Length: 160
Picture 1 (cartoon, rainbow, N blue to C red):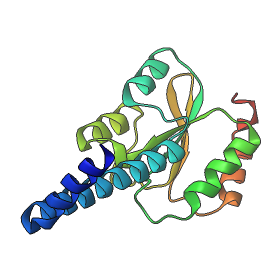
Picture 2: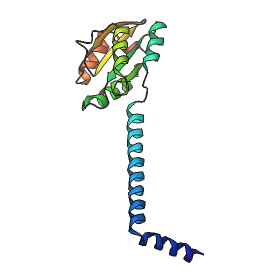
Picture 3: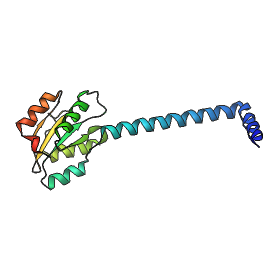
């Protein structure tokens, strides 16, 4: 039985056309699986605690107080991870908002909602929403010290 199956497989692989098609299909399937795993791991790892535009609208309408860490995971900004880890360390309530995952219309609507001029907006940034209104923000963050000064200036240790 097993010998028959092995002989059939050998016969199939003797035919060059079929063998090449099988090899190409196998390679394509492996590449697709690898790409899915890499993308899934990257998005899942970087976007923990990620919020959506609708979530922000609801929090603004509910007059919540919170921070938004606005960044782009596709950028080469090496500070994204450092700043997120620092905010986690301080146990401050913040939400990731990944620009790489949104459409341009949503970007425009968000900046309009929280009253930020898109001509001067930059990433990464921290946006402080207090009682549903944009109270303060910092843009183009490049180190923990800038974040620390911002947090101390607005006593954001209480945002939990």
